[in-house]
Length: 435
Image (cartoon, rainbow, N blue to C red; front, side):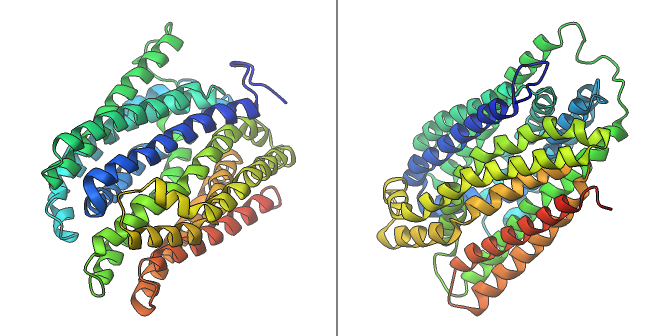
């Protein structure tokens, strides 16, 4: 196993470090939902989830493509100083994102017919800027093969968010809108602290090269990778926003608890499904510094061999996880989300079992997208994500409106979308170097 010369972290070691950090982070997030659901109830969780699509869209524009894009540049050997230019550029983009989220809070509340999300959105808005800066630091270290900063800051974010979120929501539990808003304030607090820790880490590493020194890398070199990655990543939150609006509006025509149903799907079922996916994130992140140098030299055969190896390991990890989700779905619904009613637990069990296959397909999409970026083909994954996102929203609307599936229609549409995305990415990887 070839180790990174700068850090001594091999592909597997780097993958384990970042996967462990991601898993602990997601596990804390899932555990966090237990007291949060007990305090806020399904109605409060529905409001909580309604804020996130807009947040994710703005976060995607300002931060999502940064870690992989910067990592690709740094690991290729042609990105010296890339992170410095990224600090200035994406810091400005993050500020703009925070401002937009603040002013869009009222229009979003009007569209979703939920006045209480105005305060929620405004309290969450500052975190867009801090995540942008944090993402630059993570990308820099990932490109150098050092996965510790990413893993540590991810876990730190969750610990702070869980502690502050539970405490604040409990204090304001008698006022549901304020209780929900306080949990989102906790997210902002966690991002501020994690960003400052990451910057201290970076400045210690770059002690002899000041943070604001004029960079040597042109911004176009950074945007070459970050823009396609941003376009790729934005497809998911946009589809989630459209899905939340469409699903809730259609469900309101057939059910009195439309917001609660969507809360069970998005806030509970999707959270559990994403746990094993977070484990395989490390494989995606660690594959970038392994594949990029080979692709940069034109050795596509060697680069693709490493990509296929990462995909096989992803499959080996995600397949048993999917089986476990299907088998133990009733236990997850019973013990993790105890405050749900009997019928809500039955619905959650059904949703987890329907979506268990996503632990495999979503993990493979995640790894294959990183491989395509490492191979110098980031636009391929952009096409994949947008195709699957449009398919997901369209199927959700059709299945909920014209069948008796109710919110289960959203689960089946997610299954179809991730399957299509996985097959498209596989095809693109196979074709690299043959054109």
